[in-house]
Image (tube, rainbow, N blue to C red; front, side):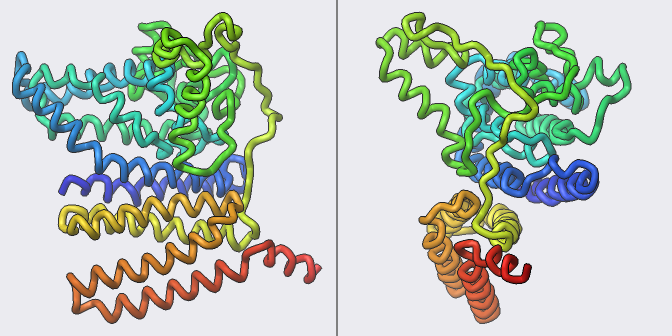
Length: 413
């Protein structure tokens, strides 16, 4: 099953996130904020859903090039060693272009928007960057590397990059720091300090940055995020905001400068508009975006709903190939709607109050329609459980709107 690797990876990643959270909770409470962490993971859910639409196209293009233009056909252990190294070399250039070209940065910026640095940031992945950057990995097809070998090496690369998104590890041994990417090197990459901008692009190996002049050792603690903070928990806006900004700018420019803007370095503008925007100085004391839900209980509610989203995502991926087109589309939409509403609750959006009732009702209807038409043996069990849970969540959600829980605490005091 194509999705099996993802299904296995989800609980492993979440387990390490939980371990890191409890490890740092007493000494470093600022490492995690619920709203920021949930947003990172919500965007990660959207990334996996979007991959379902694009993976087939990317693999099809790769197989076509391999079958028609491969000059050799690597096999066995040689194929794995060469592919692992070459994949990371291609990743370096895809990643570097993702920082130095507006068109690619518009997608990759999503990964850098969090103002915290913890393991949830590793899962905050753009919905479009993998698809846009895929062309950088096509040279591997000329070596005749089969799709399975490529997929395993790509997974190893991704798994490796997960653990470097942490502040709990200071430095690795010197020899390791020289060859491999580490938490220290990658913290620099996520920093918005002027000297840290556009540094340390390697995935597994930092040696590429040393060779091509983009290496920067970690000195002072980085300030994390992007130079112009997103100030939103909305996963859709996170993925399109930079392109929307480019579009607004482009309307003011000539046709020549419109085209140049697409491929220019982030911060570029014509001389008539002031030229390249300098990288601003930053401070550890600068205020972070920290919008919370209306009440303490609603923050917990969002966390619980996210747990159900993860369970629903795993179930969806497991049954993906067996679902009809209709039900596949319905549950795909429900998952996207769920992560969007979670962000709306955290940002206290008025529409979220009504959308959440609709979502819960839609889940009950869709889930029971699926079981009624496909799994009749379990229909009544699912019907009872889904209705009970939906009613419970509706009551919970209703009672904790408009800061009622906070008001209750004030009365107790």
